[in-house]
Image (cartoon, rainbow, N blue to C red; front, side):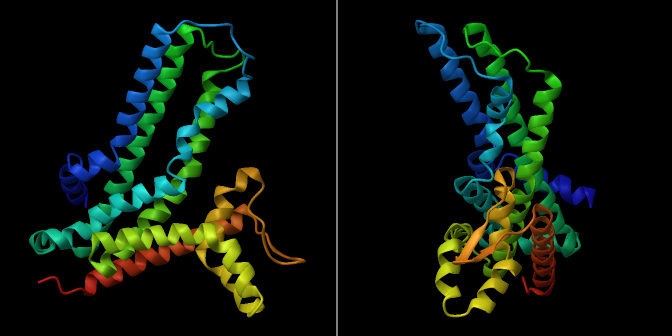
Length: 281
């Protein structure tokens, strides 16, 4: 199993898709930070504005972790997963690697490497942002009093943990779409549609509730669309979803977490089941 993971990592770490969809995070952040620092070094500094609070500075310092949970960020993650899983069909390389490994190991290795590379890239980008903020403090934008290393580490750990489930969810369904369609383009389209449906769910729920109230309410509670939106909005109190006057769907963070975990497990099982039964000769 370890050999399968190492082989997959070796193949993907320098792949063009990895550079454009994964390593782009630290590269882009580094370019932005360098630009900001150069501008700060050359520009004339005016009077300082209102000082930022320590809590506000710490919160803003972890803003990078909002990127993979945003729709564009999840589109990028789904695109990378599409290349990782569906690319083997387009390159016709499955039949070359399947004889050497059990099929379930190949899928698990791709899950592990895709998630691992994304987490490494995001952590690197996050550290670059922190380093840039620290260097910028010598140019006049002082770090507020009360900011401690422990508080910063805790905030970034929590933000990263909050982003992990949406990343895993996106990879799980993109990999399922890839195995079912055997197409990078179809996988990307279906993954984008899934994210777009999450945003349209309040409107769709309100519309269909007028015609099938019981079924609509049941589908909202069972399908993962509402629960992903609810989980992403948990810091603001959750995502209450009105279906009609006096009818509001509002579920706890724990409920949405376990519903999404169940859907991720189901998507993973379906991916393995379908791949094991595929004729790839």
